[in-house]
Image (cartoon, rainbow, N blue to C red; front, side):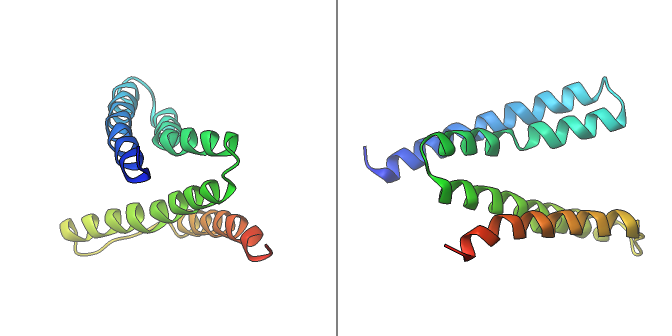
Length: 123
């Protein structure tokens, strides 16, 4: 099998897994409180990335792990947060954000991004 076919098959296999995990966490969150459902969504929402990272570490593919983690961090930062802000802006004329929550989120995202990028800079 060529690398393109392997990648395509793996990509197509991950899509239903992510869908099943998303549906399962939504079903469970209906029976739990807001705090526990948020924790479950954050944990299982990144399960696919964690599975890929574990397999890449076992294979010694550290660059793949770094790229996977950085991509996950940046996609959560840019795509998810940006789409949430845009969707809210369509429905509402004015928005209010918790400044402390935003600052804590951005600090965590920046520290995580730096911790992944820093070892790469010194190689």
